[in-house]
Image (tube, rainbow, N blue to C red; front, side, top):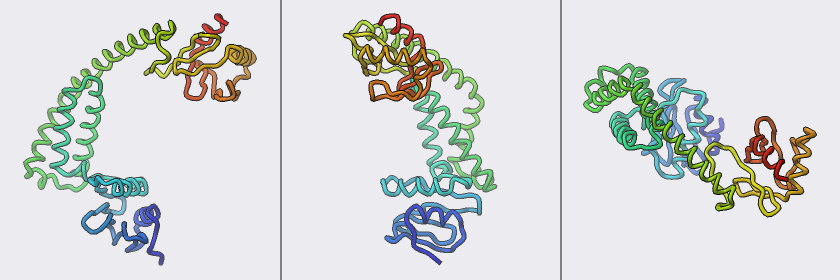
Length: 272
């Protein structure tokens, strides 16, 4: 039976749970029975707690250990996965407190922290339910505090989501105003390009070139050729200026990473 594998192979062999042991040629990763190790017995990388459930130790911080964690996560994605940082009581409590603090202070990312807290609490309590150790955990001070925080969190969940909605609404208004200002300045030639969160690109005519808001420009003669192809409905798959391929044309003309609205195309057509 083969027992020496590459880093990727050993993770998949371990996931199959059909042989007792295996290792890599340099012994950086090895497994015995239901446990797999990274760089020695001091770092338990993963452990099957039944045939369909694995605990992955994601507390490693070195680049090499992080790669091993990712390989194991990928190879065991067909199994139920629990992660050490989501089930160890003290870690969970510290992370929840940190996320709550960041949620309170956040101006643009409240939804991110709301989802983080929700995910963390659900995985933590799912693991306890799976282990059927509620009585044991209830004796742990940190666990009781997590329960208290969880009760408050879910009792106020709708209010918290409203906070997120309100923040997103305000941010959307700010973003729209910023885009309008940047677009106005760009059309007047005050700036050469601008970032656009709406994933929509704009066109302008300047110095015999048609330019995009991402800073790409093509000669007017080439723009006229593309407009003709659009009229003939033969533009998809065509190269623009021998550089950019037209991917699709529905509501937007998609060229590479550009998404150009039909209104912008009409605007340029009227100018040239």
